[in-house]
View 1 (cartoon, rainbow, N blue to C red):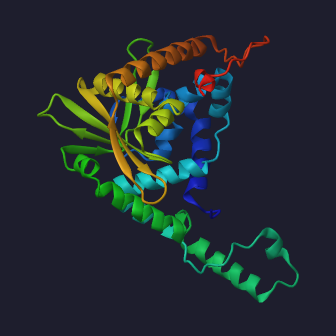
View 2: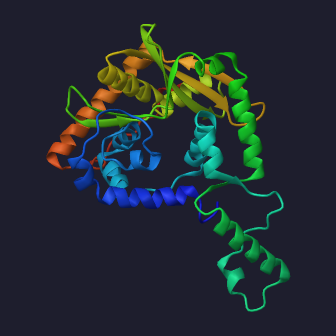
View 3: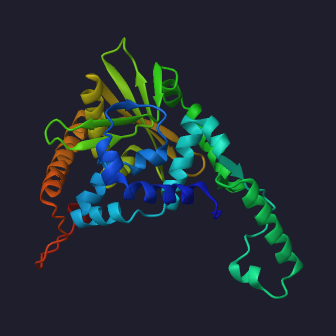
Length: 316
């Protein structure tokens, strides 16, 4: 998108913060529920998160590489962040974003700018983009197609009975940051739920996580939950809430499809899903703690291994 987009500014900030993490952050640890912590600061912190454990699960060496070489935001992550902000903090979305006019010219290339005899069309494009970038520096640029999709997505969520009710059920903590030390390993951890519904009159609170998906059908989303380790996320977040507040929490997914008619479904993580997530989370965290202690971050096996197909490949 635009070179002055918020995603690139975020990347630069993260790079600077990671470089100083070993000093500033390690001497000023955070614990508990932190409200109003900017997302850039949260993501720059050194505590392990679910996404970090996903990288570690793939390979300790991969995790170490990504920690030392932060990656640019992918289109999927960018869109997910835009949807989250529009749904949970619409005022911030309005302040942080700008819609590109439908008749905006294509952004001129470096070659266009250096042309000795640029066309009138190129000159107009350069003038437009120089003015646009100066006026909206630092904002996330949204195309007219994207804003139409976004408006439909938000409307679909608020028109879904169960999803809409979550926003009016109790005291809402929106995109607050959780920091704690794992009781079994002592590892410092962090999490950032989209929303927590605090219900002091009930025996459980509700942790809400918004997902966009190709299909929100139970079978399809169940496969996506397995592939993207959403069961691990649910286990970590509910464990964090219990550790920090002493209260149990249900983990609820709001799932909205990425294309028309933007169908919505809500799912609560089952006891089996949470137990499986807890098992995988504990296994990864124990191995991560060992790597922290030893300073050794191994890659894949040095030996030739037999390769097996997954179980589902045998199905007719």
